[in-house]
Length: 217
Image 1 (tube, one colour):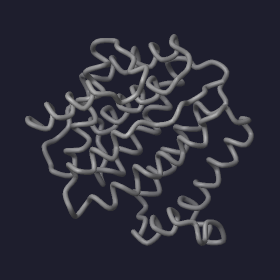
Image 2: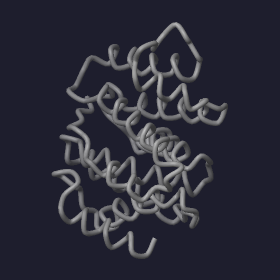
Image 3: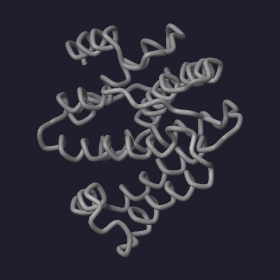
């Protein structure tokens, strides 16, 4: 079963590079992704993970107003005025996480489906638009992030191998709203190219990589 360790602080740093008019909305999406990750942490029963993931889908995609009242993140996301685009990629994220929730073994195809769902969906939500490049960038980041939090070293290396195949597709644009995405990709892609699993999560060398990337991206 996939067992995740707690997440790294990269998202909080990336918000400092987001345009002021997009920062609060991007913060909500990063926080929401962390909430989905928390569902899988600790090796819970697959049925419980599936139920909790489905709850988020029902609340945000299906628009079940009877659920989530008083839950701060749900209320905050609802006040942004979720669009059909948002709901599409919210569902995509939930399905991506569902690909690995409770799985006993994961193939390259499973990892790619997870990455395109979670990472591609999340990066599309962050950018407010979607494209093959955004999905590829998000997929690379999601595989790198998953590798960093896995207790299985072989599966972590498999994540990086799948991510390597996506590198040529991840040619992001130069818009300000995509800058945090470009920086996240720069940090992740460096480890992916070197086939280096970030075993201890986001560490000092990643801070340096982020700083260097911020000077040119």
